[in-house]
Amino acid sequence: MDIINYKCPACGAPIEFNPRLGKFKCGYCFTEHTEEELTAYLEQLQAKAAAAAGASAASKAGSASGDASAAGSAAAAAAAGAGAAPGSGSTSADTQGGTSGDAGGNTGNGQQTVKVYQCANCGAEVVAGDTSTASFCYYCHSPVVITDRLQGEFKPDRIIPFTVDKKTAVQKFLEWAGKKKFTPNDFTSEMQQEKITGMYLPYWQADIDAKVDYHAVGVTVTRWTSGDRDYVKTDKYKIDRTGDIAVNNLQKLAFSKIDESLLNTITPYDESEIKNFSAGYLAGFFAEQYTEDKAAVTPALMAQAKSTAAVLIRESTSCAHFESEKDATSYTVRAQRYVLLPSWILTYIYHGKPYVFVVNGQTGKTCGELPLDKAKVALTSGILGLVFGTLMFLGGMFIW
Image 1 (spheres, helix red, strand yellow):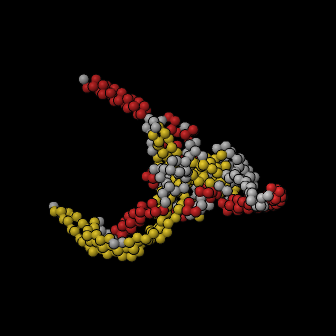
Image 2 (tube, helix red, strand yellow):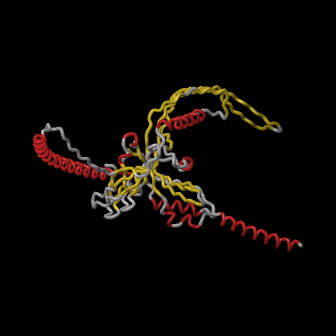
């Protein structure tokens, strides 16, 4: 099975994860279900489907065996009549089927850019990008999870589910945009609001151990005034720091198709809410698999660990400056995890340039790039210039 359509255990309608409730809620019968309940129901359906498929295959095999036996006897008789040895002829049958296939998206070097899947709910084609792991059917609008892209090295270890729903994300966007005076008129239109998309983005997390071996001369400078004289006192201290530091939950975006610096502004996430990965949490959202593997991001994670350790070492002293530093601290990656983190993303194209607004799908922290309507800026500047000019003119009249 290449894709899964998650369905309500009560009525069979498509079902999505509801961030506000922290459960799955059916939009038809309005029943609520936990992740465990939905997973158990899905496993039950898959077991029934597998049993039915096995029975069907066994039935076809028995029928084919009987047909082959009869055909073999007839062929042997015909061969004997023609003077040929039994078994010198053969027959073959090709069967074709499946739920996925390539669709005009293969590049010259054979790299796949899009793939076509079949919606298990309505049978329509679902076209997915080369890194997509969750999407929607454009015909029946059912959420689909592409399971063959969540296996092996591409199966996430952990996930932080959405707690901010679309309504809240739109509200935060309107609050943010409402403070801006020179945005285009359609920047906050309903059509624009509908474009905001809930997406799980791939990150690598790491726990790194530091074996501290740091030596330096710490310097403190004290200044004071007595009477009409200024005094300066410089003290120097020998600093030796050895021991162990555990730097946990470092993270690095593993997706090259979005601006990492913008996403960094909505961190951190609350790691206490992280869960073991379950594909059900993807239902109702888009999701991407990593484009940068573990080895590619390890140097960046190691650099974060070094920076964090350096700050902790310096904060362990009361010195403001350091001289003759010798740092032989060694670092070891203790654990590394593939995780999916939630974001709401809105992209606005203005004069051919994309502007992006993002909301942390767990904490609600926001950040965005602002498009400026030059006509509004020019109009406001003109009005201010006219007012200023009028005041100058009137002021000149009173002076004279």
